[in-house]
Image (tube, rainbow, N blue to C red; front, side, top):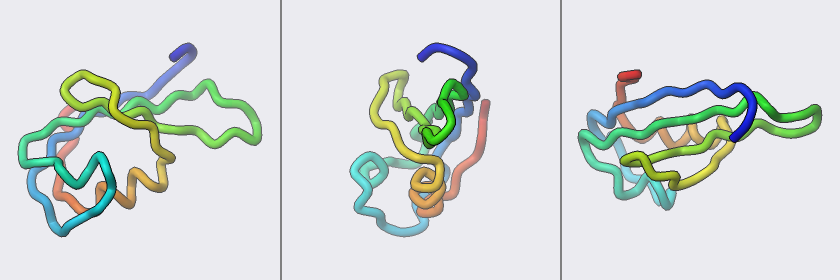
Length: 79
């Protein structure tokens, strides 16, 4: 990724309810996800968030969908 990006790391504390979302359905307590939000988009281009699990790229999602998927968990931002 080129340009400026915002990063955050979250730790899963507890699963509140089930989800069928491919990446999120198998998350367990203690798993850490890193989110990278690129600011290099252009007008008419929706920004996306890259997701990393254990340092490996696993998925790209729109911020609204990420928020919806995270609502199934209790989590804390650690970085």
